[in-house]
Image (cartoon, rainbow, N blue to C red):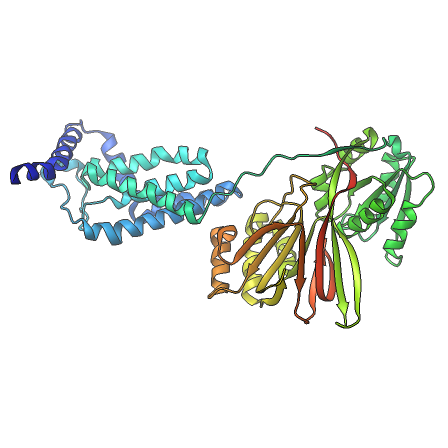
Length: 498
């Protein structure tokens, strides 16, 4: 029985020696120097750190893949070197097992089982591939080359490399559990509607806010050129904007209302259009043009095409009821929300992000702005649907936004009937550190400080203290309570069909 157990314990060693003998019998050549250099380049993870630094130059998925790969590599390296090398001590191959010219020098002194180089290589390739599969496929040959180089140079037995590679792949999959890959953004979908065609702008009344982010002196003339038959009302800074929007919508013969301005102007125009059952043509006249972008009229050419052909769709609108002033005698304001509303530090975050975006790009600007905002900011106490929270950000989107983190950008569906509710709270211990770490690693959506849900009605109370409310970029100070609801398919807007 002892002999049988001994043979069972030794069969991996016999296989290792058999495979290593085949490697030893390979003829010498330039490949020996190549594998020595490749193996040395991966010492202390230098090869993968350098690769990640290059990949980080490219924003979006490539940069996220690099970060994910590094985190997976870090987990694999820690588990391999701190745990398994202690639990599984093993002598490395001896010089007589390989030709002297091929043998690594100096040979590492730590346990041979498992291979840390292999674990790190496979972890980085698989971790990056979970975010960007094509990139992972491109990294696989390098990872396998590093793993094989550890056998070729006599640093490890083949089974060390196999076990290390398995640990690396497992580490990458574990990181995916707490750092899930962002779900794909759904395709754009529309509920198409009937709207009058407006050739040359006939029947179109346009209100132009001169305070809009992209307004220039020649804006009105340019609009008159593409819509020669339209009525165009240019609103000056001293004019009452809402009054001018209503007057524009009431011009005799108006069959559609057009608007040139920022998100706040577009929201006021939407309220006027809904109240008069007029379709709305949103022109790209603001700084970011959130609604125009989501509607497909982010360029003047697309807006003109949709208006001329009468191509339109339906959108929900959010209704915001804000109470200000004294608790016993509140002043009630009713607003239309087309895009987003926020309470807390979100407006400061957005301003910082927009300021940094030209120099850093949107993803990196969002991270830097998040760090600056929350390093100095303080949370506020709110009751959200009756549940008290210490909140950094209370964010509500009219419709489901993507990605599902602190920087939502895209809204593929305009009439899904929901409010996208996102709270980033300070209820948990070490809340500030948790927040900054989540932003750094891109795990905001999965962090315990983040609460994501969807609703059709939301009520937020500041427990008697005034709070600053922003609706579509327009600030409303001194608010004590705010309620949100959704009106389904209330707005008809022009949108080009594919």
